[in-house]
Length: 535
Image 1 (spheres, rainbow, N blue to C red):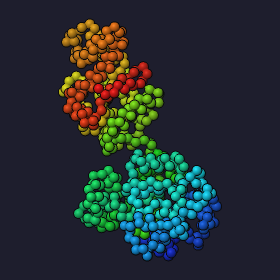
Image 2 (cartoon, rainbow, N blue to C red):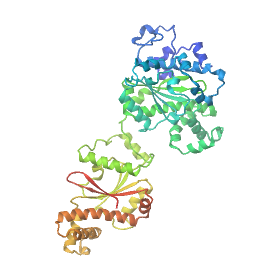
Image 3 (tube, one colour):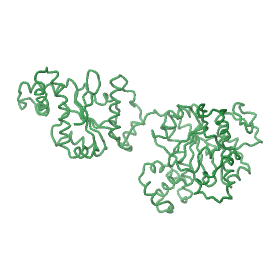
Image 4 (cartoon, rainbow, N blue to C red):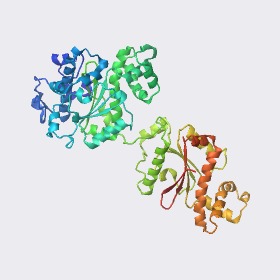
């Protein structure tokens, strides 16, 4: 795999007896300097290792060489601790016993004194990091110790199971680093015998797997989203070794999980994908042997060319697989979306034509942030005025944004979104110049018998007529425009009241503070929404 994934590293894949002994017989990366290698003559003098004078063609090769030389020193330091008879489970204790003197003797932290003296930058003159490392959150040792690097040289992102999903904080952290200082190398470091991967292997193998893990840990992870992220790597490993033992499948799954994470990074993030495609960033995999401390470099993804061929849109879509959006966050999204629309900056977050996102939304189900009960007026397009995309809103519309009865499609539709789609916010929105409200005001002023109105229009106006009468009674000396505005507001709160009274589901959600029902007024002149709050 290393030969397929990183052919440019083959020249450095000469293993010496000394480097093999460093890991006590374990396979570690061969990216160690070989004095007999005449590739120096072809290297670029700009990328010269200061300790050996060895030249490399690219900055990426030099950085990887330096990091693995640092890991060699780390392994050497660990071997020097054999007299302490410290087992793998006590790695944390080893790190606490490290002294600055011992670390410096092994070549660690060589720039600490320079930093203190202000010669190499220091906190007020930060240096460009050489690499960003994604690793497991379990604290075997700090990554700068494992790679024997100046702490300023590495940016570290740690997450349980060294995994990630589209648009999560791991990808966000990498994108921030690339936008800020662009480290040339991104290393996904897996580790042997990872607890999360081991739990996934036990679940996948069933009775074939020995029960070695803590039962409490197994129970906590059994239905977690974290375990679901790791399961595909375990399935890959089992396909490659269908008759493998638990130990064999676990070892391969830990390696495959590195590649899965690399795939997610490149296929989900436009920023990472473009940086890898144009050569600014080299994304490599590595595996830490926790028993020896040695890092095995796995190279770039074997299918890198295919992964960077199709650039992701840089956008994501929320589906039923994601957690429900909390009420406060949902309300903030609606508020911000309308501000974009009203200021002429809406429509930029649409993914029209993005087949991957549309397919994911289709296959994985919807997860709307809010139910919106609005008017059928064509001048009040709900998704547009909130600047939302397909899948964001569960929209219910009728003339006059009203609720006719306790057993109707509007109540049932709202209850469906609240219970099955886990929606936490309901917005009842009226708007200026509403034709249905204007008709109800005219009927109230003329004492029209609504039963004589043709068709079902009379039934519709009957749901709004009370709001019109209250507005007329509250402001008898005002003009029709003022009464219409007041009637529209009253009608919003009347609809909220009916939703709560007619629906046990809405009533219970509001009572338990698990659901917010909010009133709003849309101005068709300005495009802005006035938030009226709760009833």
